[in-house]
Amino acid sequence: MAKPLTSDQQAANVVRAELLRRGWKTADLAGRIGVSADSATNIIIGNQESASGRKRIEDCLGTAIWSSTEEFFARQNSAEQLHNYESALQQRLTASFAAQQNLSSEFQQLCEKVGVNIILVQFDGDLKSPVWGGADVAKSFEEELDRDNAGSLDSVMMLEKSYFCFYHTRKLGKALSIIKGGIEKMGLLEHARIFAIEAESGWRVYWPATGELFPLK
Image (cartoon, rainbow, N blue to C red; front, side, top):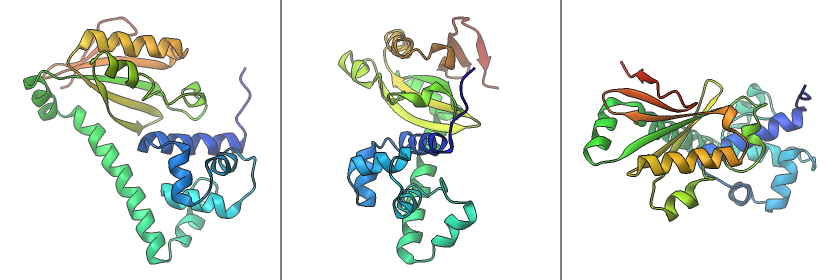
């Protein structure tokens, strides 16, 4: 039985999920809060006690991580802090909108007209999921997809303990093979489901390999 995560590990996973949502690396966050990448990493994983550093991370990401929600909102009392919170919130909403549009029939029809296929990968997004334990699962296949001109990552979205990754491709079979192979190399196949979204039809299950179709309507 896996050991329960410590509070530091849980907080680090929340930060990691927020960075993945934005497509940021730790160095990007460090630059925004004015510390070195090493310092940011140590603050995130709990190796460095820094109340001010944790607050700056929370304010930059626009969410309470170590503080209570009440403490977090109480700090948003200056024009600069409110602006930072608004910017972080806007980035989150924009990322969610970009992902959600992949689920609209209008967008799917547009993709079909221009010969673009939509691939959806659904990962277990619970904080205890091994999905958060290594490389950025959303971007791990980008280099190979790009090299083979097989597609690219469009957007990601967290929803109800699932981490959704949307890819666009003109080479559906090749892209599915690359993505499934990449997930398998990471040892995460049992924590993933892979779908090809068909306009006017639904989600065709590619992995687990049932080929079943879930209608959109």
